[in-house]
Length: 483
Image 1 (cartoon, rainbow, N blue to C red):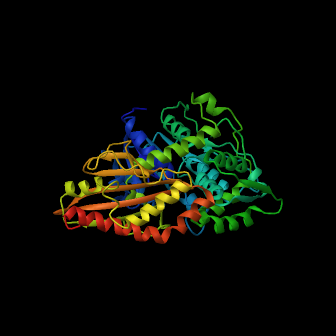
Image 2 (image 1 turned 90 degrees about the vertical axis):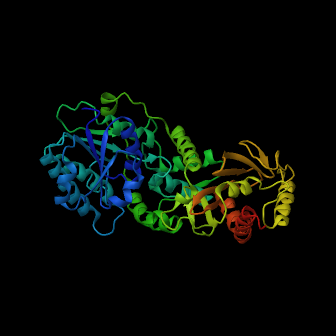
Image 3 (image 1 turned 180 degrees about the vertical axis):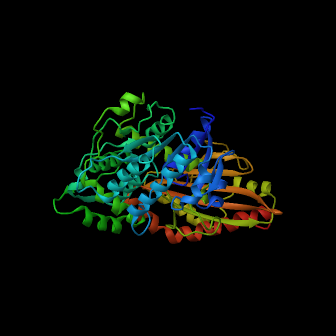
């Protein structure tokens, strides 16, 4: 296929599609995204990407979207929707396949799920397989990849593992947690999906099982995650908890994933391993193992954490005061608050850059002093280090009990905590011009380590509400020259 050909991407707002989109653009493909509400997706896509309106359940809306398209990615499913998700998936696949054939699309690339076609196959896996059949039924060649557990920060399986391990020091492990799977890293999934654009298929519609080199259970994944996070966890096997009861328990422990997670757990009674060598035969890719996949997921989360503006961690209310425990970024708890300051951005940032040391923390300095003494008693650095320069900060500088992680002069200062904590903490200040003044956004973030981290977080919540609100007011006063 022509690398400058036009690709249609469905599911660009989802986990897989959202990560695949920039890779397609980097490789020189022209990309068109299908979205039910283009105005919500358009601001988030790379420059040059076309966003068109369409709904897979509305056959008439697909014709225009598929015109001129050489290949199309089918990366949507209705598992998170209410009602009969199987029927919705069935109708969507039928509509898409018919429209693709009418438009002359040369291939469809689809990501489904591993699992043998058994009479008692779960509704989730049964629907994934049926979607592939419906796509193939109308004559357009389909490259169907089937994957087991996808490991990556933000993936459903990984986030469920994280939530369970971080919150439960002791876990009962029903039989389904011991069923064998063949996990694959998100980076390897994306590599296969990209390679699917150019792989020779001879006009056929291959079904390609993909997975990493390790065959493990969910329980073993939990142990490896706990090891890499430095957590001690005990898994107690029990024979009685069925997938159905387990899914209800999951809803209590991890309510954020309850709706989709229950359907996913129901599929875990089936082994999901690669049964043939088609992936090795057709592709030269070498997926990484479980240990490296989890390590990459944690590293990638740190990278996205550093590069993403904290106010983007939620979809609504950006810039408004938030309560601790309200917003999350992966495993991190985020508190962001902002204030419009009647001063130039340079003056506001100058006040931010003077923080700590002899200037103090702009509010309740005695509380910071007490916190420093407590840290010293615990073997930490306390508040005694001060700062190198009273006016300017550079990356790597010490600042009382913090270290400067990043400085973008005039715009951003990010501090990483070096006090003794059951987790990791950051404090960030961002200055953005607004009207005749500047908006100062102050964000505190905590990455709790297990239950002790969560207990610490909620234990100091009242003080954080007081101190961080006062600090923001103090910074604004200082910037205006009235403090």
